[in-house]
Amino acid sequence: MKTATALVLLLGAATAHAQTSVTFYGIADAGIVIEDGGSAGRITKVTSGVGAASRFGFRGVEELGNGLSAYFTLEGGAKIDTGEIDAAGTIFNRQALVGLRGNFGAVALGRQYTPYHTAMVSIVDPFSTGYAGSAKSLFPHNGTNIRTSNTITYATPKKNGFDGELAYSVGEQSRSAAGRQFGGAVGYAAGPLAVRLVYNNKNTDVAASGATPAVDRSIGRNVLLAASYNAGWIKLHTGISSDKGDGAAPLINANNPYGGVRPTPSTDGRSYLLGISAPVKGGTLMASVLHKDDRTGFNQDANAWGIGYLYALSRRTGLYAAYGHVDNRNGAGYTIANNTESGSGDTGYNLGLRHSF
Image (cartoon, rainbow, N blue to C red; front, top):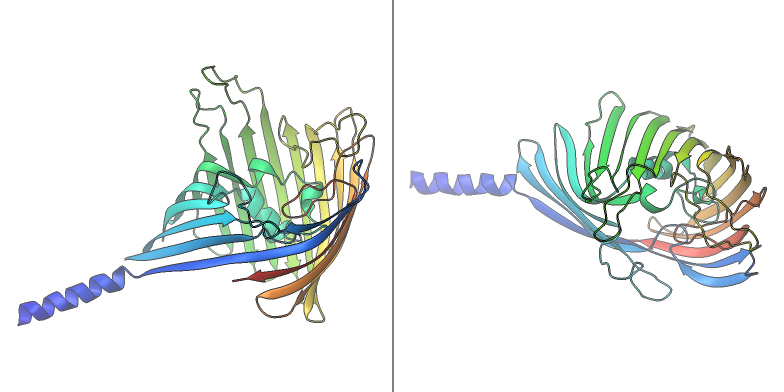
């Protein structure tokens, strides 16, 4: 009898240590978008993911005991306007990772967000890189600066407000440096203040089939200083990004949106942002001003600004409206983007609805 009782207690303890939970979550976001000022003229459309990309996902964790847990995320994108997957041939194109978390921090492997993206969304941009006011219009927040595949990440525990993170994306080429990307961040967040310094390095040398990769000829580097201060009635946002080298700052719309001579991506530039977000009459007011300082011989500078308002119908549902405009100089080709689109002109208008679940 004692043996049976002990066995029951042991099985109960094992069950307690192996508690598992899986959550299904997502965002459904769709809006009316008007783009103006490009060579294609005025374009009016219904767009999915204007403020935040429409998505669905599974998030799970298993408690392994002694403070250790295993976790995973599988997240795919969907187009609310057409019902399609937002990236053909994929299912979980947004995130696909598995990891371990404990007193040592967290380690994960798979397709993951970069430290650059995390700082842009959570600290720098009052629009969280969405809507017509998105920092994407002038900051190099696109492509593999947002997320990378074949990635190993490590995040430290947070101590006295300080933390750090590292990310390494394997290029999977015959020469280990080719196609790889790595970066990291250190930061402080406590009370109303958040500050983060981010480094990103990517090698875009990728070999053709059967060929040998080039030798470190196309390397781009991004250094981002991000800060925000929440005074309660208003939150201040700022960010400075220094971008150098080939591929450091690809144009979000590389299709020559204004006609004429095709714009040249900057290989030596600075991007600046000052912004605010504030609770106003049951919603959130967002605004920012941006400047692009191209330090190459092309001197293709740009200024941009945006304003938006998200009204909360409930904790999960909101209506939004936003406006953005960019002023290009010397043949620059920057466009007003939103969360999921690069934009086709120098002006953008948004009106939409988003729901999270």
